[in-house]
Length: 317
Ligand code: NAP
Image (cartoon, rainbow, N blue to C red; front, side):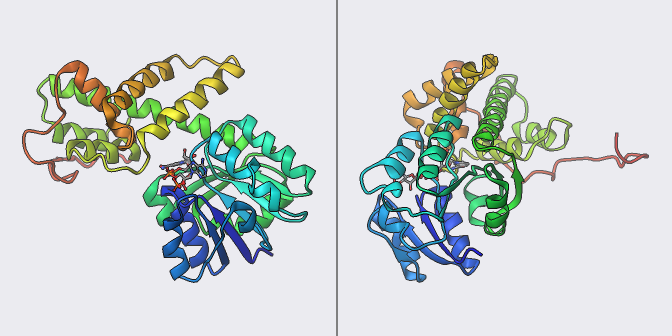
């Protein structure tokens, strides 16, 4: 049974997950490159480690959520990295969004030390991480997955098992391909609606009820109308993911023509200086091209007030 856990990487996603590990009653050790992010955890009784190698000392399970492949390279494989401290019998879980090839490299390195490894990236963002509502996908040895599943269930609302290592990372890239295309669709749709002179609040009412609705379109659409681009999922990270999806798609000779268009707009939005804003700031590249700003004529209102809904005689469609 897992009793002691180390969490490395206390960014937007890792901080929420580490807090929920602590809340669930596990003994927690934390490590983060910028040490100040460890302070709130120290105040709640977590041990703060000096290095990744120190962080993995004497714990059952090591989890980490890091920006990208490069960060994983440094924290796992680097001097004083996880691999220099980890011991046979321990379990490591990479929850970052990286290339499946990176997950396989980690598997091999951990395997040489008798350490079990799962790739388990997550769907959801800042709020889902803080509120233990993530959608988690995991891959690797089934018995190890079953052993750590109770821990993952404290972090997410669903946990799906994907079989052999690398498959969960692949699923994460599949999901983020869909997310990127939805964000592009929302941005293009709202710019077109603005150009057409439509009432944007009513546009969002329709997006919320029609058969193309999705929570992602609604929450990002509402925030765009409020001009709120505060970061849950940084534009820089979406551009990083687009690069991973492109590489992955190419490696399998799977076509990704629409993703290339999104990537071009992401590059433009980053060049305009919006990389640290939320991924929805992708719309700013299109706004510049169209010489408009997507903004309702009247203050944006919570969805549903302007809807006149007829009750269907027969439920469903
Ligand atoms: P974030 O807020 O930028 O945090 C990144 C973390 O990685 C920080 O702890 C950062 O340390 C650390 N880091 C970066 N480079 C490092 C290096 N070279 N050495 C050591 N540590 C390094 O990112 P996030 O939003 O939490 O995302 C983390 C991962 O989850 C990413 O792979 C992302 O794609 C994925 N993800 C994000 C979301 C989302 O909505 N945000 C959703 C699903 C998945 P410092 O604090 O010192 O900078």
